[in-house]
Length: 96
Image (cartoon, rainbow, N blue to C red; front, side, top):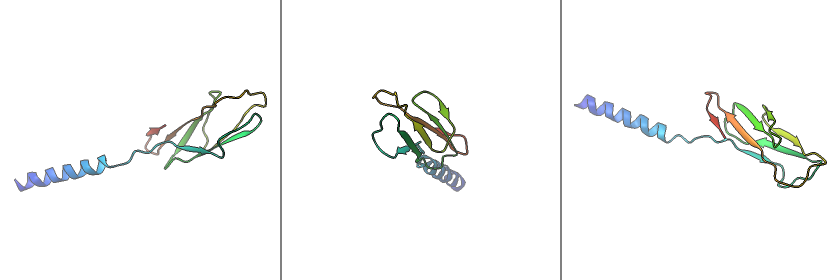
């Protein structure tokens, strides 16, 4: 009976440790909030433990870079530009 109690304690301990692990998220910042035509958007990766970084720019071109500098065309009209960052950890888990 004592052996079963020890095994049960170990299983509960392992479940407690693994369930408390915080999930990592892909995160980035820019050097300012507003940009104008002809400027460069500086996107800086702020993710924890990112092994690879895959950026998708507003024109849907993908870049494998730690940080991204994206030029806004001088002819570009006003509007919102969306950037996406997906990071992968060393063990292959992806985060957006």
